Image 1 (tube, one colour):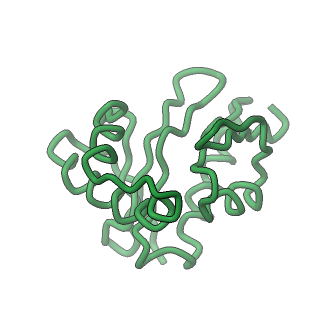
Image 2: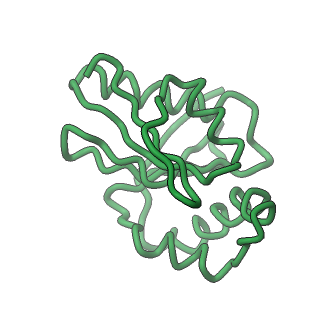
Length: 146
Protein backbone atom coordinates (compact mmCIF):
# COMPACT_ATOMS: atom_id res chain seq x y z
CA UNK A 1 0.00 0.00 0.00
CA UNK A 2 1.35 3.39 -1.01
CA UNK A 3 0.80 6.08 1.65
CA UNK A 4 1.06 9.79 0.95
CA UNK A 5 0.37 12.78 3.23
CA UNK A 6 -0.05 15.91 1.10
CA UNK A 7 -0.90 19.27 2.64
CA UNK A 8 -4.55 20.23 2.83
CA UNK A 9 -6.08 23.44 1.52
CA UNK A 10 -8.83 25.64 2.91
CA UNK A 11 -11.17 24.24 0.24
CA UNK A 12 -10.77 20.78 1.84
CA UNK A 13 -12.41 21.80 5.11
CA UNK A 14 -15.92 20.48 4.39
CA UNK A 15 -14.66 17.05 3.32
CA UNK A 16 -12.37 16.83 6.36
CA UNK A 17 -15.19 17.86 8.70
CA UNK A 18 -17.34 15.07 7.27
CA UNK A 19 -14.51 12.56 7.64
CA UNK A 20 -13.99 13.62 11.27
CA UNK A 21 -17.72 13.29 11.94
CA UNK A 22 -17.76 9.75 10.52
CA UNK A 23 -14.67 8.75 12.50
CA UNK A 24 -15.87 10.12 15.84
CA UNK A 25 -19.57 9.37 15.65
CA UNK A 26 -19.53 5.90 17.31
CA UNK A 27 -17.43 7.10 20.26
CA UNK A 28 -19.46 10.28 20.75
CA UNK A 29 -22.78 8.43 20.50
CA UNK A 30 -21.58 5.97 23.16
CA UNK A 31 -21.04 8.95 25.48
CA UNK A 32 -24.31 10.61 24.50
CA UNK A 33 -22.35 13.56 23.06
CA UNK A 34 -22.84 13.24 19.31
CA UNK A 35 -23.55 16.65 17.79
CA UNK A 36 -22.57 17.14 14.12
CA UNK A 37 -22.54 20.95 14.41
CA UNK A 38 -20.27 20.86 17.47
CA UNK A 39 -17.97 18.40 15.71
CA UNK A 40 -17.61 20.79 12.80
CA UNK A 41 -17.06 23.80 15.09
CA UNK A 42 -14.31 22.03 17.03
CA UNK A 43 -12.46 21.21 13.83
CA UNK A 44 -12.92 24.75 12.49
CA UNK A 45 -11.38 26.17 15.69
CA UNK A 46 -8.09 24.37 15.08
CA UNK A 47 -8.05 23.97 11.30
CA UNK A 48 -4.93 25.42 9.72
CA UNK A 49 -4.23 24.15 6.19
CA UNK A 50 -0.49 24.73 6.69
CA UNK A 51 -0.52 22.16 9.53
CA UNK A 52 -3.10 19.77 8.06
CA UNK A 53 -2.21 16.74 5.98
CA UNK A 54 -4.42 14.32 4.15
CA UNK A 55 -3.74 10.62 4.61
CA UNK A 56 -3.98 8.98 1.20
CA UNK A 57 -3.70 5.24 0.65
CA UNK A 58 -3.18 4.18 -2.95
CA UNK A 59 -4.41 7.60 -4.09
CA UNK A 60 -7.62 7.62 -2.01
CA UNK A 61 -8.14 10.06 0.86
CA UNK A 62 -8.74 7.88 3.92
CA UNK A 63 -7.96 10.27 6.77
CA UNK A 64 -6.15 13.36 7.91
CA UNK A 65 -4.16 14.81 10.76
CA UNK A 66 -3.33 18.26 12.11
CA UNK A 67 0.16 18.44 13.56
CA UNK A 68 1.85 21.54 14.92
CA UNK A 69 5.51 20.53 14.76
CA UNK A 70 7.00 24.01 15.06
CA UNK A 71 8.13 23.56 18.69
CA UNK A 72 10.09 20.84 20.55
CA UNK A 73 6.75 19.57 21.89
CA UNK A 74 4.60 18.72 18.87
CA UNK A 75 0.83 18.89 19.19
CA UNK A 76 -1.16 16.29 17.27
CA UNK A 77 -4.51 18.08 17.47
CA UNK A 78 -6.44 15.71 15.19
CA UNK A 79 -5.74 12.26 13.74
CA UNK A 80 -8.60 10.48 11.99
CA UNK A 81 -9.16 7.61 9.61
CA UNK A 82 -12.50 6.99 7.97
CA UNK A 83 -14.08 3.93 9.65
CA UNK A 84 -14.04 2.05 6.32
CA UNK A 85 -10.23 2.16 6.41
CA UNK A 86 -9.60 1.53 10.09
CA UNK A 87 -7.74 -1.61 11.17
CA UNK A 88 -5.63 -1.91 8.01
CA UNK A 89 -2.38 -0.58 9.46
CA UNK A 90 -2.68 2.84 7.85
CA UNK A 91 -2.84 4.80 11.09
CA UNK A 92 0.02 2.77 12.56
CA UNK A 93 2.19 3.43 9.50
CA UNK A 94 1.53 7.18 9.51
CA UNK A 95 2.11 7.44 13.25
CA UNK A 96 5.34 5.43 12.90
CA UNK A 97 6.58 8.03 10.41
CA UNK A 98 5.69 10.87 12.78
CA UNK A 99 7.33 9.14 15.75
CA UNK A 100 10.48 8.47 13.73
CA UNK A 101 10.71 12.10 12.68
CA UNK A 102 10.11 13.30 16.24
CA UNK A 103 12.86 11.00 17.57
CA UNK A 104 15.31 12.21 14.93
CA UNK A 105 14.63 15.83 15.90
CA UNK A 106 14.52 15.25 19.66
CA UNK A 107 10.86 16.26 19.85
CA UNK A 108 7.98 14.78 21.79
CA UNK A 109 4.36 14.46 20.59
CA UNK A 110 1.32 15.29 22.70
CA UNK A 111 -2.33 14.56 21.96
CA UNK A 112 -5.66 13.91 23.59
CA UNK A 113 -8.18 11.18 22.83
CA UNK A 114 -11.84 10.98 23.71
CA UNK A 115 -12.37 8.93 26.86
CA UNK A 116 -13.86 5.55 25.94
CA UNK A 117 -12.69 5.72 22.32
CA UNK A 118 -10.87 2.81 20.70
CA UNK A 119 -8.11 5.28 19.91
CA UNK A 120 -6.89 5.09 23.53
CA UNK A 121 -5.67 1.50 23.10
CA UNK A 122 -4.22 2.45 19.71
CA UNK A 123 -2.09 5.28 21.12
CA UNK A 124 -0.84 3.13 24.00
CA UNK A 125 0.14 0.41 21.52
CA UNK A 126 2.02 3.06 19.50
CA UNK A 127 4.28 3.93 22.44
CA UNK A 128 2.40 6.91 23.86
CA UNK A 129 2.13 7.23 27.64
CA UNK A 130 -1.00 8.39 29.42
CA UNK A 131 -0.14 11.64 31.21
CA UNK A 132 -3.51 12.99 32.30
CA UNK A 133 -7.28 12.79 32.19
CA UNK A 134 -10.21 15.17 32.19
CA UNK A 135 -13.93 14.56 32.23
CA UNK A 136 -14.04 13.78 28.49
CA UNK A 137 -10.44 13.28 27.33
CA UNK A 138 -7.27 11.35 28.04
CA UNK A 139 -3.91 13.06 27.43
CA UNK A 140 -0.94 11.20 25.94
CA UNK A 141 2.71 11.96 25.28
CA UNK A 142 5.29 10.22 23.13
CA UNK A 143 8.87 10.96 24.08
CA UNK A 144 10.77 8.23 22.25
CA UNK A 145 14.00 9.26 23.91
CA UNK A 146 13.35 12.99 23.50
